[in-house]
Length: 416
Image (cartoon, one colour):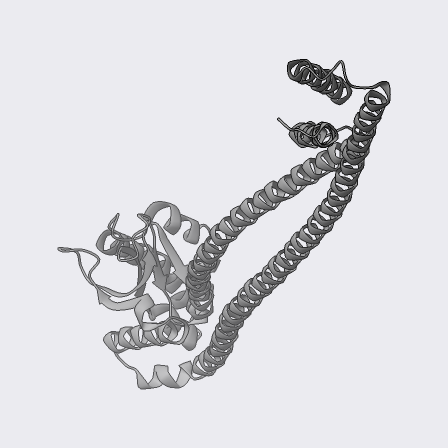
């Protein structure tokens, strides 16, 4: 609509200029009707030619723009698809790599834990088995020793020798069952106290491994009962039994007063009787064992019974050692847990970054679709004339009139 209006205005201006020029030259009256018709026809033809050229130029420009937009849209679509495929491939590679690393780490941790546990358990059970075999061998030797008590009684003649033999037997039992750092000989629990023959070193209650308390063990060997029994003297045996009860109570009181000293020792001590017969006779005394425990905190033990007690202590020591190793394993697991927590946080951060990249890809896809939609709308617009062709049309429109004037000048034989 606007180009037609412009062309109309231009034609009116051109015609007006022609009329003014013709009037000024005073030749308008002499122009014939045929010449005016020819001039008008030339102007009309020039107008039609200009309109045709402008329309053709506009159509060509529109077609070129549509083709370029279509090619640009295809190029953008292909590039976006390639970018999406590359990003998806990269994300898949990262995911596969992370899964492989997780599997390798999990397998490594499992292997280390399994190896450590198997090694520690194997060592612990091996040590327990060896100690059990040693105890069995020791019990066998003790039985053989008990069988030879009669011969020893004939060899040993004094009370002092009997006591020394009981002390040696007690030391042998301790040596067979416990290690050298788990008991002591001629131990003085604290400064100013008397020394006890043997004492078992037990862990203290303050949690410090350098602190410990002692369990006193003293050996006693009253021979009056055994002598009466060997002579088969009933009266002497009866009086010896009564004397045995008093002797055991007296020795228990001495042990309690001399060696029990809290908190350096335990609340009780052990009286060791070196023969099973003597130990059995003490057990036969009504209420004697209970009185010794309640009144004097003394536990009576024979060779077999003492071995069982010491074996229980030995197992307790091994249990403590196993607990210490279990604490090390717990610390290792805690460190692995901390490391795995850091790795989990790293995975979460990677997941967030991947999610952020995926959102950016979705936004880019939306933007590309919006661009394609807008380009499609541009393709659907109706053909429009190019306003920028105004000056070109104006210059082209001026040519025919000038040519007409030149013709008119030649026709009249003069020019302006």
